[in-house]
Image (cartoon, rainbow, N blue to C red; front, side, top):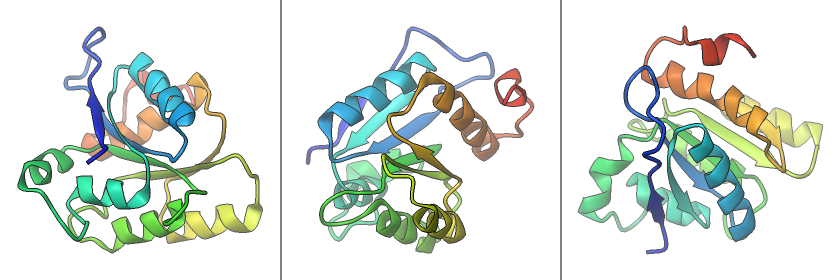
Amino acid sequence: MAVSYSSSSSKEMDYGEEPHVLAVDDSLIDRKLIEKLLKNSACKVTTAENGPRALEYLGLGDEQPDNLKSSASKINLIITDYCMPGMTGYELLKKIKESSTMKEIPVVIMSSENIPTRINKCLEEGAQEFMLKPLQQSDVKKLRCHMLKFSKPCNSRLCLGR
């Protein structure tokens, strides 16, 4: 399986364990950029190159390796590209929100296309945010609040300065 895992250990956050983000994008360059931005914000990052691989990692795929089921439960945020071959980010979002075990995990959709109907459709289906690519470090700061809300109440200075 081509899911990669990497952990940043250089910066430990002041409120405990590093948030774990699943980043899904069919573009290697975009995956590397997202991974770098998230690591700069002291996040653990797992990447997947498409929706089916992400579902496998989350334990929602057809074939669920036992060694992945426990690690998937520690995901604090999923960020996915909208336009991917085989399964769009919207379709991935729907699968996640249909799952009783994963539906509470915040999902952020990103796209290089600013299409209001697409954005609204994703938000109505349960996406936490819709962000335009390429992502910037300031975008990742917005994501931190969603990660913190999912794991514990959001009163961090990182969230208050939106």
